[in-house]
Image (cartoon, helix red, strand yellow):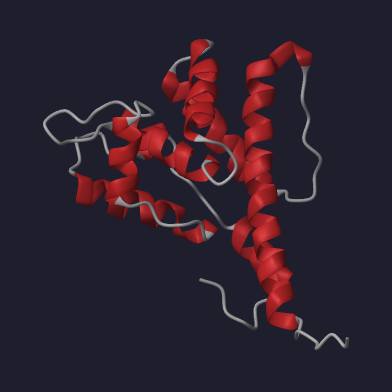
Length: 175
C-alpha cells in the first residue's frame, strides 16, 4: 500500500507500471478457492483495491453473478469474471455488472471481451490524462472503454482523497 510520503506523481508512476493478465495468462487449469483468492488478490494488489474474500465469491455464485464452481474448482471464465467484478463493484451493483458483462460478451467471445477490457484498463492506467473516445459505431467497445475509465477515475479519486487527508490537518471551527 502507499506510504504517507507518496505524492500523486508517485501514484501515477505506479499506475503506469501496472500490468494485468490477459485471458491466456490466467491459469489454464482448475483452482480451489484459496488458490483463486491468492491469484485474484495478487493480481489486483498493485491497484490498491479491496481484497476479495471467499464470502464475496460465494455470494457471487449464490446470486448467479458467476458460474458455480465444478467440484469446488474454478475455471478461467470465473477468474476473468471475478477480476472484472472486483474492479467494477465499488461503482455498480452486482446485477448491473453481470448485465454489462453479458452485453459485451453477446457481441464477442468472453476471451475477446475480457482481453479488450484488460487492454482498455491498462491503456487508461498508462495514459491517465488522455481523453477517452466513444463511438456509436462500436457501442460494445465504447462500453468497455467507459468502464475502464470509470475504474481509473475511482482509483484516482480515492488516491487524491487519501493524499489530501494525509496533508490536510483538521482545524477547529469557532462557534
